[in-house]
Image (cartoon, rainbow, N blue to C red; front, side, top):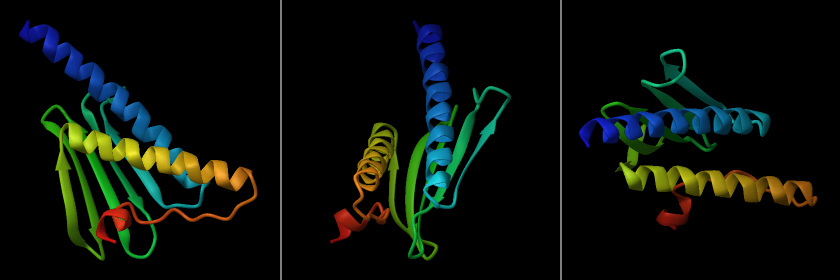
Length: 122
């Protein structure tokens, strides 16, 4: 049972790395400074994703054999740190928000990528 769970987690890490690479590429196309560095040839050992979401706001998502974490910072000060499933949910929220912005741009409406924490912080 434990070997099966380990293999499933490794698959999860690989899937997250692929998604992080795609998100970084999409953000770059939108003019946002973003990067994704992976460990190992196929990303099976993890990755580090960082995006500058304007106005001194940045997010970092780390995935590795040791765990998964999401951190939001403003001017270098940590605002929010999430781990595990909550970190993945926040990454999904950012991705969905990005898709809605792209949709608005296609329809001719102007939109910016706001800071991920702004909705929570008011």
